[in-house]
Length: 190
Image (tube, rainbow, N blue to C red):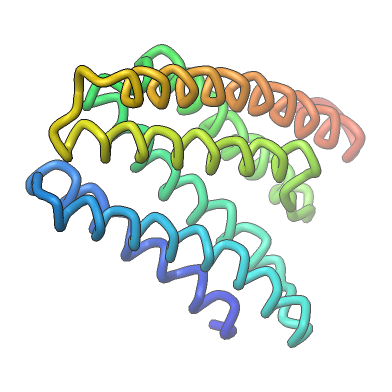
């Protein structure tokens, strides 16, 4: 594994840690811990790409490993926020369908010897996923700190839901872009 891949792998450790802290602990300190995990996870996503480019460590493995780590991390966050009632389960289901669809398409392309890296639409989708996650975590933090009936909580929850809905729309667009890429790669999907 390259240094960039090792940085990426940090997210695979932090995602289940976020889930455990989120589900099994509820105090002032867990709010801080959840924010630390969230921020470190997102920073590793930024750093792994910078390291790979700077050290010329861009590889087919990294092109698949990074979005894999992103997906596991983001699905973990979104599941937690759905369980807490901040995000809507239907939107999470749409994200799950999209992610499994992209996995299928990547496998199809790999069978043709092509590695599918994230497209610009996938990168934009990831940015909106991060924004939705941060807003949902802010809403969760307000609730965990004892203010679930506040206007701040309601506003953050509404903003998180709107941004999440936009991110799901962008996820569908990026999925369709991947389908187009597959069709260009010599033939039908199956």
